[in-house]
Amino acid sequence: MNTTQSWIVVADDAAATGLVGAARTLGTEVVAVVAGRREVADALATAADRVLWLGEPGEAPVEAFAPAVAALVAQAAPRAVVGATTPSGRALLGAVGAALQAPVLSGIGTVELSGDQVVVTRSVLGGVSEHRTGVEGTAVLAVDAGAAVSGTPAAAVEEVAGEALAGARVTEVRPRERAGVNLGAARTVVAVGRGLKAREDVALLTELAGAFGGELACSRPLAEGVDWLPKERYIGISGQHIAPELYVAVGISGQLQHMVGVREAGVIVAVNSDKNAPVFSQCDYGVVGDLYQVVPALTAALKGGA
Ligand SMILES: Cc1cc2nc3c(=O)[nH]c(=O)nc-3n(C[C@H](O)[C@H](O)[C@H](O)COP(=O)(O)OP(=O)(O)OC[C@H]3O[C@@H](n4cnc5c(N)ncnc54)[C@H](O)[C@@H]3O)c2cc1C
Image (cartoon, rainbow, N blue to C red; front, side, top):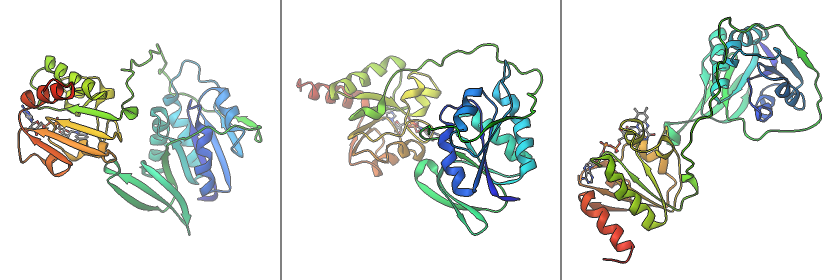
């Protein structure tokens, strides 16, 4: 293993220069491999010590360069390989991990060297717990790129041979449609779960959220099961993590995967017809009752009509 080197693998990520800091903690020489546009390689030349560029990707998706990137990294056997947590970053890192027969660690908080080991802290279960992991051999780390670093190019960009897998090409690029909601900015969030019986009843909760001057959210089954609300609105371990002043959970049982998304909320109010629902041990105020009675009454009260 080359203990002085730390590599970063980059696809088309404009913020990739932000990865150099993490890589530099683990090696005195930072080598970047870029399987993307020349501009990305030029940007990395301002922060890394060496930049290897596989040439313009043309119509090939960056993922098709993963075996070529992995072969370069495996040959160098550096102490660490850092990539972004973006979909293309993960594709490159997955191939690197397979080539090195090393696990890819994600959820990285801090990174440091301790003797011969790379030691990372990793947040697991949506931040409920933190693990400290020591890695023998090359550490392959998926890191949030953070802010881009800019400056004067210090390294020359070296073009290296690296073929894309044959047969893969981008045929169309279609922007993802987003709901355009910013739950993170809302002071009050009213969320609804599977206690709701029908799609048209979402209107009851929209009205309550409006009466609070807040936003409407939901549990995952409503966004990824029945699709009554857009995916951008579900809260939890695989959804949004928010910290509103007030979170009102309606017809939500309070499973861990949901509640980790509101760990930082100020006050949590739960409305549930089952007095034994787990949400009642995780809220500040609980209303045991049928949401079809409680929600209209609450809305009316907020509007000053009750
Ligand atoms: C890997 C993984 C990741 C996951 N990630 C997420 C995530 O990010 N976010 C998330 O939300 N879930 C996530 N889940 C799913 C999670 O485990 C739960 O299944 C989900 O949160 C349950 O949603 P719910 O509370 O709406 O439904 P349920 O658990 O079915 O609860 C419905 C509740 O409504 C109550 N109710 C029924 N009728 C009424 C009524 N008339 N009035 C009032 N209350 C009523 C019931 O008593 C019940 O407590 C994940 C699961 C896995 C395995």
